[in-house]
Image (tube, rainbow, N blue to C red; front, side, top):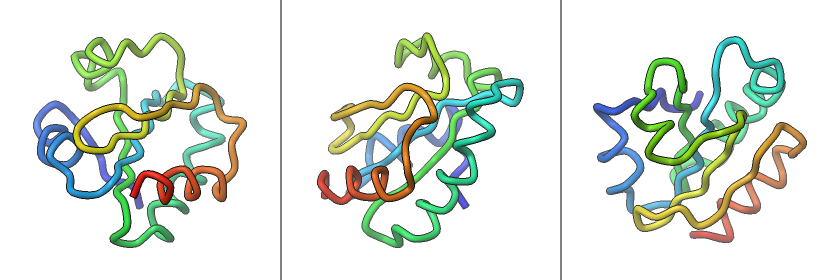
Amino acid sequence: MALQLNEANFQSEVIDSDVPVLVDFWAEWCGPCKMIGPVIDQVAEEIGDAAKVGKVNVDEARDLAVKYNVKSIPLLLFFKGGEVKDQIVGAAVTKEQLAEKLKSLA
């Protein structure tokens, strides 16, 4: 299961992480977000300690959504060393593609 990220734990879980982090910006009312949600959870379970996977509910963590300029969801940001290294907008992505992108950042 993916980490539930918010303003309180984002710094420690994402920015200060020693491993790459995939962050899914989503909302309860977003249909495509609901489609990719289970895929995000599968990646979180299968990636092990090689990376972290987390979710940010944009309705509950508006400051993070503003900070990362979230204009369309789902938005997947790939972090390494506290910086955004890549992104995917939308739900047209497979579990394998996400895992491969995370591994390439390791």
